[in-house]
Image (cartoon, rainbow, N blue to C red):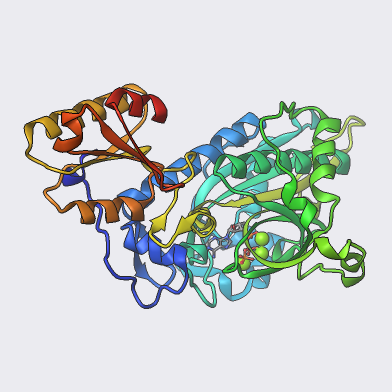
Length: 439
Ligand code: ATP
Ligand code: MG
Ligand code: MG
Ligand code: MG
């Protein structure tokens, strides 16, 4: 992409209502624009990152054997009356009436709708296990929308629903989700720690939240420092292997890590003092097992091996796709701007032409641009007629992992400059070598 043809409305100053760095930088980097409280338009750069995050979530869900669907954002209240949640959900639910006076709502989550799909089409235990998931916009009329996309009212969420014959099978589905989430967050360059949590309006006892440690997080967390040394890495995993998934679950959830809702000071004090940590965290996902809560209420049964109808055991599993942009920036930035992890960066490299209009510089930039494309990567080429300082400022703010700076003086010696956004280190080298380093 040539910057002269792109739409990147960067801001020089932080808008006053943005109090945390991720919100400030998303506005300054021209990624989002608020349309009303907690509701945002996604501008090209922000939309690109959102889609990259979404793609990673899809890939990891599919790898785990989960099946993508898409459910509507507007739902009939009737299903929610069946489960009893139409009244119970409270003020966070946006209720809407259509022209015929029917009660509708904008989905804050989708247990009822997916249970209805399931009960309409699945009759036998032989179809199980089954996990249906979607990535879809949600609306919750949050009391205090704030921190940009971190606590929006409209937000993008992956929500997956598991259907199993027994509790045991449902716990395997739960463990499978835990593993897939560990992989998902790590691919985004994030450490998200599973912590024992409380379940809230969705109900149920078995639940973990995934938290990214950050001073600006809204949750208070307590953990054993040893959990921060765990990483899933590139290990092989067979998602059908019950014992293997259970082992990962145990490895990642045995050490003390809890949110304030389930914090147990006695257990916490049993951790060696030098490993006790109290901190803040951003909830980027949550997994729940809630048994037959919805299947009982809504009559979602399958015929079991004994021929009798059995209510299915269910769980629901969420990832805050749009919140992740904020969480990643909170975890990866400096005073000049965002530092995108390679896994989610909107472009892989920025090309800065120090002398637009100089025939050699223009040609060298174009050939670098083509070479990046030939690697299957995307470059953002700053071909505007701007001062170098302003071009560097923009590149630093939008946080691409690499910058290649091209100027007539370097070209005379056959070199360009390659700069790592993360380390800030610059090195001169021939253009081909710069391309080799990026690829
Ligand atoms: P929170 O405790 O932050 O209000 P939640 O527990 O109500 O979140 P869940 O029902 O667990 O949210 O939804 C799954 C995920 O969706 C959360 O882990 C979070 O990452 C994301 N999420 C929830 N509410 C919002 C919101 N208002 N804005 C952006 N993302 C959200
Ligand atoms: Mg909430
Ligand atoms: Mg929560
Ligand atoms: Mg939650």
